Structures are given as C-alpha cells and as structure tokens.
Image (tube, rainbow, N blue to C red; front, side, top):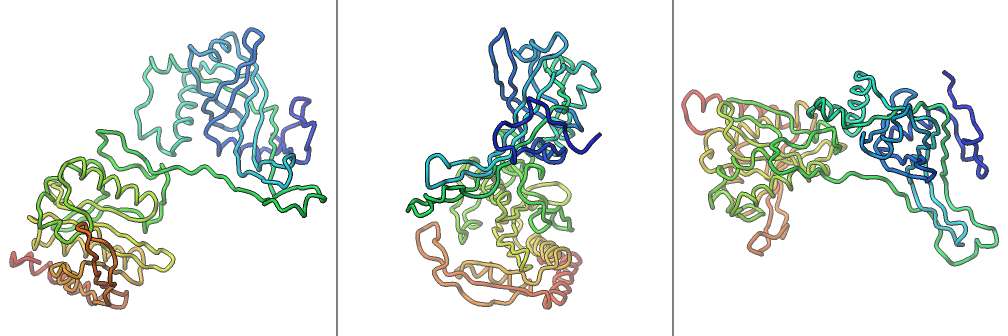
Length: 419
C-alpha cells in the first residue's frame, strides 16, 4: 500500500489545485474526526443525497443504513456507485469584498462502488466500530444488536481507492486595491463542541468518561473507602438516597442554596453538579455507608487549579443523622489524602459562611488555618449578603494534620466517641 491515493479524473480539482491532498494520513484524519457524511447516488436517473454515519477501518469506509432505505435497496444487486463527502468547517473568512469571503475547511470526497456487507462477522465488526467511534468503549457499554436488528440494518463497505482531500487554511485573500477599505476583515474560527451530557430519565449511572469533559485525575471522582464512609462518583442513582438523608431544615441552614422541597429539586442539584463536573468546575462525590450503601450526603472538590496545584473542598451536605459519627472527619481525611498524597496538591482550602460556627469548628479540627474573611462574598438564599470565612492547609502542614486526624478516628473507633 502506498502512502497516497492516485489522482483520477473524478478526484482531480479543476480549481484551487494547491488545496488538494492525496495523502492517506490527511484523508484518514478527516474521516476519523467527522461523525457523519453525505452519500450521493442515483435512483432511476435522479440524484439522491443522504446523510449517514460512517467509520473508517483501514482502507475501507463503512456506511450505516437500513435494508428498507433507498440506498440499501439500490445496493442489493451487488452494490451501488456512490460519491461520499465529508466536510469539517474550521472557520468563516470575512473579506473586505463580497467575492473574497470564504471558509477554512477540511474535506474528503471518495468515489467507488459501495457493496453490501453480508458476512456476519464482518458486519458485526463494522457495527462495533461504528458504535465505538461515537465513544471509545461504548460497544461494550451497551447491548449488542439482536439477530432481527442486524437483519434490518444495512452496512455498506466502500474501498478507499479513489479519494481526494481538500484543505483551506489561513486568512483573508483580498485584492490589493481593497486593502484600504474601512470594513473589518479576518477569520471567525469554528469548532464542534459537545455540551454537557443530558441523562435520560430512569438512568442511575453517571455520564461515562468517554463522552468528553476531562480525564485529569484532579477532576475525577475516584472511589475511596474508609471505616465510616465510602466516597464514590455522584450519580443520578443517588437522588432518592439524598432526598431522604437531607430532609431536614437544619442541614440547609447556612448553605448557599435553599432546602429542596421535592425529589425533582434534589435531582436538579445532582444534574447541576454533574454538568459542572463535565465543564471542569467541580468534582462531586456521594457519601455512602461503607457496608449498607445508604446515601449519607455529598461533598466535592471545586475551584480546581491543576497548574497551581490547589483545590478546594466544599459543596458538602451531610445528613443530620450522620453528624458527629466520624463520617465528616473521614470524608475530609480521604479527600485530603487524595489531594496531598495522590494529586500532589500544595494547598487545600475551604469556604464557609461566617455565621456557620459549627462548620468553622469542624474545619479547624481538621488542622486548617483561618486565613481571613471575604466580605460580601455571595448572596444567601434569603437575599442577604454572606461574609465568607477562608480556611486553608498547605502541603507542609498536612503530615501533622494527617497524624492527628488518623489518631482521632482510631480513638473514636475504640471508645465509640464521636470524631
């Protein structure tokens, strides 16, 4: 196999030949980045163009369709001549004159005979590749098709033999006579960006990592287990447990959001936390009983600064029945251990309402120092301005604090006294 495709009359440009590419790597990269393509073919002498999904495996492009669709029906008798087009739009070029407006893009056009895939093993492999393209590992994380579903699905294979790529990059190309015109000119970059996942009703699991977001360990809610509590990734499946655990006015007394009055409002809190996590602003955990799995509360990392090696612990809401049981102390110990000993943090900090003396005492017992007050920091649910107390612990202070925290938990376990 050569490193480039051989130009043919159909794949040779009549204009802007400097934008043409026949390299395998260029064409492959465009096909692999794009999720969808357009397939042109002829039916009864009339042109048709259909959008569909595709995946490249080696030098074969597999196209997804239906056995009852026009493309699938046309391909039954040994195949169908097609022209497949893929375009990635990278920017809009604004020129001083109408005629020089343009676009930055990367595109691929492939011609050939698309054959129906009839071998069961090849068809199953192509379907797996199609599913894994939209999320690596998704094929194993979803139900495979039944025999009936496979029979209703058409997969076409197009050999990548007659292929060309076209790429336009750069800025404005204006006539020299237009350069002094007063109109703005330049490039508006465009890119495809996925939004936060929207979990379907009834799904208990958190959105999987392959949907995007960040894979940094600083922003990953790794499972951590102690004697009093297990911390695991917050997920929609925790909504009912949180609704029961946090159903108490005193729990919400000093928090920045009002007490939820329905399951839907608790679900919205979880949804917002997961959206923030996907956007890189928060890492939420559920606090669970390590043996029974009962939901006790929730806590988070936030204000994560990986470059500066700083993270905050907050958004902590623990059910009243778990106060002074060791759950809060051990939760913070697990989060501090991860921050200082796994992530290599230099500083961990906390915010709390100046009126919340119980929270301030709890943070101080962890070994954190009260570093100051941020006045009129944020609005409370009742509309008054909150002054926020700022606590922090540094990496130098962590070893001594860790020893004290572990001794406190061990003593509590021996004497059944609250930690």
